[in-house]
Length: 127
Image (cartoon, rainbow, N blue to C red; front, side, top):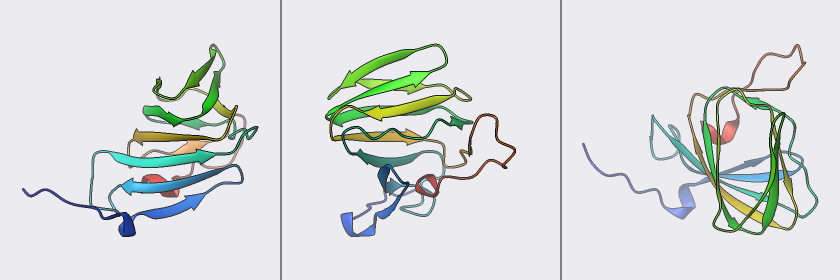
């Protein structure tokens, strides 16, 4: 088994209406089959979508401030804080200031919108 290097020119950018994601490692970026790693950038005042991911994610705040909301929790985070979001928890992330996160999770994760009949989708940044 060998070590894999992913150059900054090999990362992949994607996004949503409120966030920009940069895939740093995944099955299609560097070949990591167990863990995906991506950077999330959000602008001040932007809420991410209310959604569910079917696997655990770990978010570390690199810069700025944000708040995490679930059906049972709500708290603010700042640079240096880490949030562990269990699988199947309804969550929303809201940027209090321009912020950047480093996030890891499963490359087979599926996202869904609570109460929607739409089939779960694979976020492109984890693939």
